[in-house]
Length: 470
Ligand SMILES: NC(=O)NCCC(=O)O
Ligand SMILES: [Zn+2]
Ligand SMILES: [Zn+2]
Image (cartoon, rainbow, N blue to C red):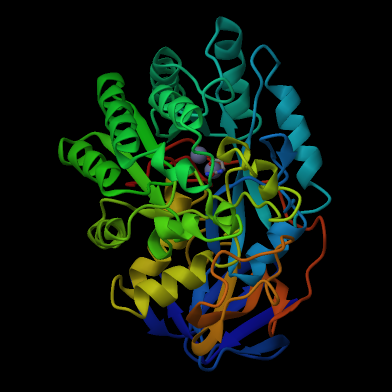
């Protein structure tokens, strides 16, 4: 079945122009003026921007954490993602020391295959580097197409890996063609600060932020960047929240070290004062790294504009306020970390970024889609609008004004971190590989239609393994 999109303004990471798009099956087959309508379904995009589908490089759907499991799974999470203009998610597959890597990967396939309504892929957590793990990694890359490895430098005694593991992961990733991702916070120092706070009787949510100061993020980011330079490898720092970490990434990049940085909507638009909300509501705003003093926001926006940070992930890891976040009443360390962000990622970037003149329209596309596709081996199948690419397309109304609320969102949780915030811009319709998932703000997709994506190695193009310039 053919479809033709007319009257919209196509926006890519490099261009903004008016043209029609002809879709045949799953692919874009032509872009131009006055494309023939005969035999094709006409989609009128008047008044909208036509973006490549957003790619969310950082989600935790149905993930065990802190004695509970994140509430949005591959069904509710990908539906909410689609409502927000995202057509691909890359989720973190957690591993356990000593367990064959194929086991957790199978668990993640089982969680996702009958549920996802949009395409998806996995990153693999590295909890240890043993000879046994080293033997398994080539198959993870070649057979599963998992070309990004995640190392946690925090969450002591849970996920945290030591520096030897990080360094050996960097060396191995270089050899195999993978990108290393880090959660960069100094877990040992945080552990000390947490014990001290609890000893002093400080148990409220705000102490989550006060025991994870920006210096511990800056230090870990700098350390990971230095080790990347030493290994001559490649690094992607997830959820950058503060000026100190931005500085370390910019410094490494200025020396030619291959380091990339992602921030998240919560760090751009919320601040540390939210953790002080009464009636334990501060728990809704507990992320690691924590929300920062407002002054950090300007540095994050400037970094996106100047290119010191390159991507926006949601770090979607949602928990209900009632029954999950409240596990931490009387002890902030028991509040599950994370929040619902998958749906509002693009809106926050557009409304707070483009509309307020902090980034350009083309940067918006680069930060939310194109750069992510390039870094994670999905380009050019995903991440742009061009002949031959998957028809993952978003029609976005840039002028509608609305208020974000849990009453109208599509995530499975009982609150929205941006509750009551006025924003400009909304996703109207979404196509995933040529089929509507969202049509005129209604969900019309199918559970299990989302396809698992095997990704190319770092720096290679998905289709033909040619090198790309990232
Ligand atoms: N970020 C967060 O608070 N929760 C999700 C897990 C992680 O990314 O560290
Ligand atoms: Zn993290
Ligand atoms: Zn995360």
